[in-house]
Image (cartoon, rainbow, N blue to C red; front, top):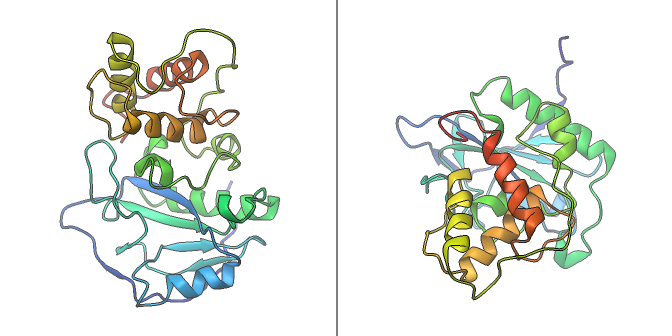
Length: 252
């Protein structure tokens, strides 16, 4: 069935440059604004002195604003990595979703906004060869530095609409876990599994702060019921099933 055309307003941002030569778009990266209002977020994304931008902004009522053409490199990811790629801005399209964020109360994402995000994602995916596992959170590519769009964002709803990679999270139960300070083969296997999915993580066998940050980022996206950076049975099993469900050759 043909989708109706999106209603998108344009407010050009000066904050962009050329994508790196020979690189195609592989990631659709979702953020929240973390500001009081969508209007304030839009003004910042269009402020040449702020040196930040995204391709699109979706406000709480579902209004979509195009800020940077998809063919250009918007400045939204910052210091980040995924599957060894560190110029995430060159390989991604960024969507800012207005939400005040964790520091300002972190309300739920309204239904009208989620519908608009889904429609926009579907539209973008119809034009770009982005694998389901290439639909990512800002926190996935910048664990420990970013936590958006956060655990209240409904990734399962996106997946039901054909967007992103998802399995139902394994229920939380009592059992052994790995946590900060642990060492050994179990930690090494966890780190290898997280790196295999795409997270930037050295495989040291030591559950250090970086490993805890990556586990928390994974939980925010894929096991949001409890985000604590502890690799419990639920977290590890959900990760295993996600990796098992990837197509041969990885997530991108």
